[in-house]
Amino acid sequence: MTVSTREIPTSDLDLFTDAARLDPYPLYERLRALGPVVYLSKHDVYAIPRYAEACEVLDDWGRYSSARGVMMNPQLNEQLAERVMLCTDPPDHTAIRALFGRPMRAEELRNLRPRLEQEAESIVERLTGQESFDAVTDLAEHLPMTVVSTLVGLGEHGRQHMRRWAGATWEAQGAPNARTEAAEPVVEEFISFAMTEAVPGKLEPDGWAAQLYTAADNGEIRHDQCPFFILDYVTPSLDTTIHGITNAVRLFAEHPDQWDLVRHNPGLISHALNETLRLESPVQQFSRVVTETHELGGVPLEAGSRVLVLFGSANRDERKYPDPKRFDVTRRPSDHLAFGRGEHACVGMPLARLEMNALLRALSKRVARFDIIDSTPLLSNALNGLERLEVSVRLDDSVTTE
Ligand code: HEM
Image (cartoon, rainbow, N blue to C red; front, side, top):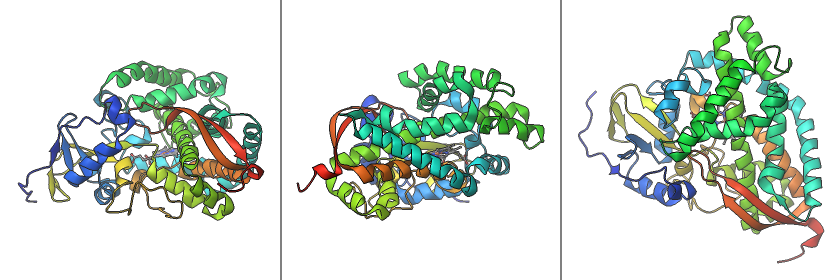
């Protein structure tokens, strides 16, 4: 096809500095204003900051491949390409995803639901009886850690290190910087654990990880694929959900009027969750490699170039969401991109929603107000959340009018 010679919007913004990671939104706004595709000279990548083009990329795995890695760190891309599910294309991806999705089928989650709801009730009951608590470690970590450590079945040693390993795998995906460098040895430790310790005989026999080895015994996948697929179960399931929950608590603390709407109308909970995920998306970006020269949004893209889908920016695109910075639990943005979209849309989404829903529901029954005592922002190459969020709560009968 003929490719236009139109000038490509270019920017020298660095999306991986500390300042950019702590508050990327003004940079995203500038990128969206520059165009649908913006060449970032610092990273040699084409940023996709707007919603419509982000959808085009995510919907077309043929032109935008994941099989050469979806991160910004070339070393990690090389290490994980075609090894973790996230970094494969169909037909490999289709077969692996069917296997992966098995423990998260509707029927399995229906059985899990009462247990999760009960866990959520008891943790919320305990924390709301305290003077204050950290919404990250005391509240948000509990369900994802319990669910993943029990269901994946890595055993005690693995359980102890899961959060550290998962966190490092996220940090290692940034464009090379100090955080990426510090994370790389920890990722190596995780891979080495998966290869030597997370193996039949050492895994909990009923866990998801052990089931991967059973699938390999049945010829559905190869044995050497199992350790990397264990990474696929652990890495994306912890910090994402933890920050999703923490971001929700922060937003409701800052917008008590929106919390009032939710607690007086529990039917709004799932919409409110979508709105928190849209406004403060836990995962900020993933990339793809262009497989054939073509145009996107009128901008020429050459085969072999890398595009960076900015979920956090697309979810605040003013072309898609009117008044995008406003937190509005009645907005119902079910088409947000926080869970991705297309072939690689988050396979754990139903589980994440179940966990987040259970906690928010339990909180809405008891808590009238969240008051932030202190917080520490998260400085991360890929994630958006908080390191710490110390809150106190006022219980339902303690708030009359404000
Ligand atoms: C709020 C919580 C979560 C968020 C925001 C989130 C976000 C995402 C995003 C944006 C993608 C798309 C990746 C891409 O396009 O390249 C994705 C994929 C994925 N997620 Fe999640 N995720 C969450 C929870 C979970 C959980 C609980 C699991 C549990 C196992 C999980 C497992 C996965 C896997 C395995 C993929 C790869 C899917 C594929 O390649 O087909 N995620 N997630």
